[in-house]
Image 1 (cartoon, helix red, strand yellow):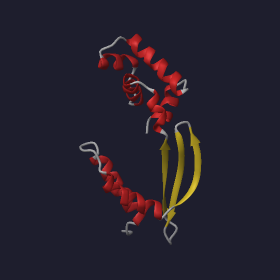
Image 2 (cartoon, rainbow, N blue to C red):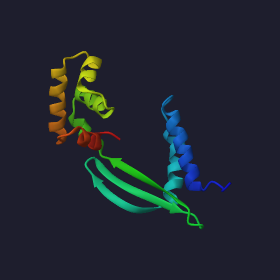
Image 3 (cartoon, rainbow, N blue to C red):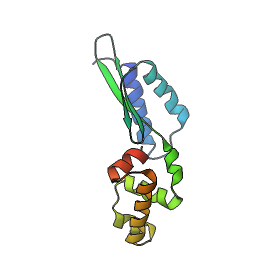
Image 4 (cartoon, helix red, strand yellow):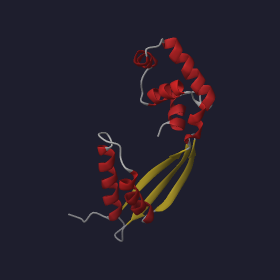
Length: 139
C-alpha cells in the first residue's frame, strides 16, 4: 500500500470535518491548518470568473508524478445583503432544490407569495434562472 501524501491526508481530514459538520458546526481552528497544508503544497493551474465569484484549481504532485487537484470557489456574499430576511430564506430553500409549492408549504404562505419573492430575488441579484441563482448565492 502506497503511503498517504500530505495533500491527500489533509483532504481526508477536511472530508471528515465536513461529515462531522452535519452533526455539529465545524470550528475554523480545525480546518485552517489543513487548508494551509493544501495551499502550501500546491500551485494554481486555472482561474475562472463565475457569477458569484471566482473558481480556481489547485494541483500538487509528488516526486513520482502522482497528484491531486482541488477546485475552490470563492463567493462574494455582499449581494445577499440586498435581500430581505424572507427573501434570503426563500433563496436558501431554492438553493436546496425545493419547489415553489414546497417552499410555500414550509413557510405557511401562498404559492403566489413565493413566486413574487422569487421574482424580487431574481431582480435584486440580476439573475434569470435558478441555476444562475445557485451559482451566485449558494456555496
